[in-house]
Image (cartoon, rainbow, N blue to C red; front, side):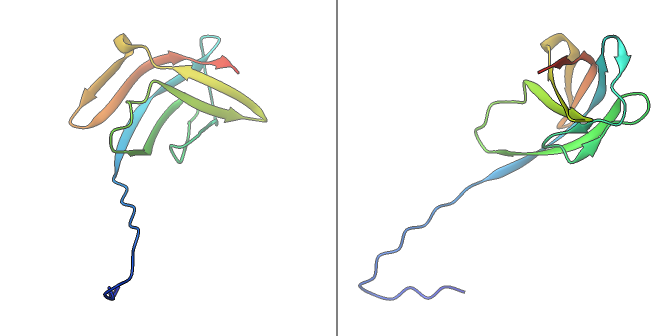
Length: 102
């Protein structure tokens, strides 16, 4: 509860966010990228490189165009090509995407 008193100035900052669920399969050199952490998605890939993650975006942000992934001290970037991405009922489904060492 905030009580506003007369004669005082207040500065208020509002931020709206939205969640984006992303599911897909990550590959490196045509092999599954196993047990890798998807940065920002609070998830880790499984034995087949599959993952499901929830990303928090600010309202008005551009859609996710790539994923940052970490495994054993290495950083990867996984660009999301438009032909490999499908939006279904608010869930971003990624077919196989090739990752590159950053």
